[in-house]
Length: 218
Image (tube, rainbow, N blue to C red; front, side):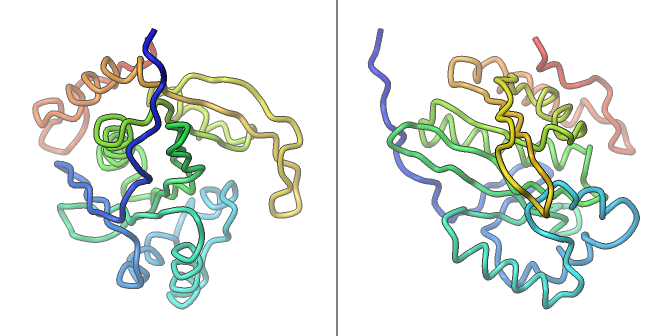
């Protein structure tokens, strides 16, 4: 058996380009768009499960971006290429190049892109960069165990459930039991092929609706 190898590096602050989504290192220039994507119907429930609260102004969003960029995680803005607007963010977390392990976290996909090919491609671009470009062996997804939507999304994206960390955190004054999921490098080639099949333009009708579902559940 080949000895496991470290990853090449932590992710750099670079742009990752897809067909429908573009991931840009997050900056103050994205604040107005992300604030606009953080107000309206359904938003409070989306923010309920994040460590941060929904911003109450563009200024709040700017402060959050500045704090995020000062910390150890590396956030990107998720851009809809059709409009050029940022509709959310996601971050590289638990970055361990020596162990070739990394997490996608801090995910906020606003109502305009949630459950669309833009969000799916945003996840795919992270996974492809981690495995194919940087040589990571493990790609993690974690969430509050009460967040059924996040757990369903993890399974749809091909992550395998690994277990529950009971009483893992206190978040917003409440207990958080954390559900752990992962994709490992040996699983990635088949998942990559299925993502690429699903994201192909011919899999969508004129209204952008999928013709076939993403078949990553095995």
